[in-house]
Image 1 (cartoon, rainbow, N blue to C red):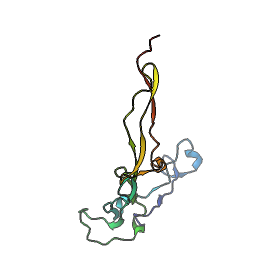
Image 2 (cartoon, rainbow, N blue to C red):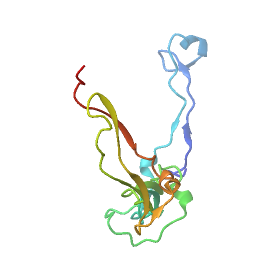
Image 3 (spheres, rainbow, N blue to C red):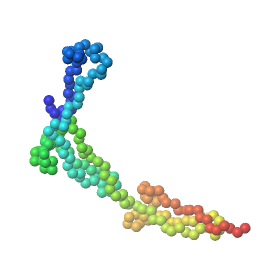
Image 4 (tube, helix red, strand yellow):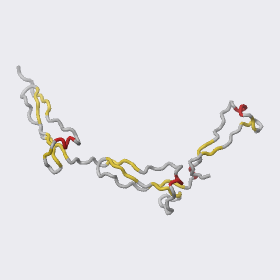
Length: 171
């Protein structure tokens, strides 16, 4: 039997009496029968999965994917050096295979367009509640003023007005 097969080992289970002779199954009904099958022992498999190094991320910024090769090889005592060529993947199919792809998330991508926010202006009222304003404009990476819809594709427009409160008004 192939020690790497994803199979089960089967055996016959019988009811026996105190003398060790086979007995009718009803004579053993008070005792649970031992299992008649078990998974094969894959630790004796002469093969193993060998993952290669991860390649570079598919994106230079933001979320991407990176891949690596995973090969099935003959087990060797020194796992840092594999002189044997890879064997067909079917030889390792009963073994858990390492992942071949994973997500990679590099630095956030710098947007082509960005909001430029000016300082808050003075409060519209000298006493009580008022409103203060600031300029919020959208610029390209080259510093050209563009439509705000370009910046709104990446982030919402920052607030242009804010309530403010100066001292209480005298009556």
